[in-house]
Image (cartoon, rainbow, N blue to C red; front, side, top):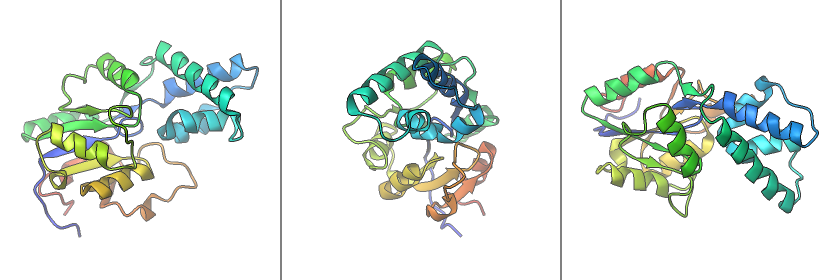
Length: 226
């Protein structure tokens, strides 16, 4: 059982945790594949790799042996295509809106720590009407370090005027849990997110797991599900 602790704030990863961005990201990759005279891939194949961002999607579409110059071109083109249709089918995961209301009603703060570039992070949050609600937004280019380094999480805690030990961090990738643990936060795996078949989140040493966002409510009182 996780020892009870005071919780002041909840921090979320973005893609696959707070937002279901997979439909629009998969569409952008398939547009790029068609541009490059390759075959578009099934959505079901792409969805699990979305939490690995541009790197994961380009690898899924083009393989791991891409020349550096081509990689730079493909990466830039992918991001531009994605930006064109950033929030067409993207939405908050079911239950997230209610969860955020619960967090705020309990006088707690919440924020986002993602490896997604800031210009895309802020735009998609604005499109969905939650940017102003977030107590902080730390993106992949906010600092020199990115997850799994704990610095972005330490920075987020400071922006929320609290201590890392009083924060919960929720994410759907192993690097999220690594970063949260290194930062001293209570860590929860969003198993409803984008986890590939070969991944074993039960081995990531998180403090718990969420099969639905609303299960987080049980962790808000003293940082324990019990």
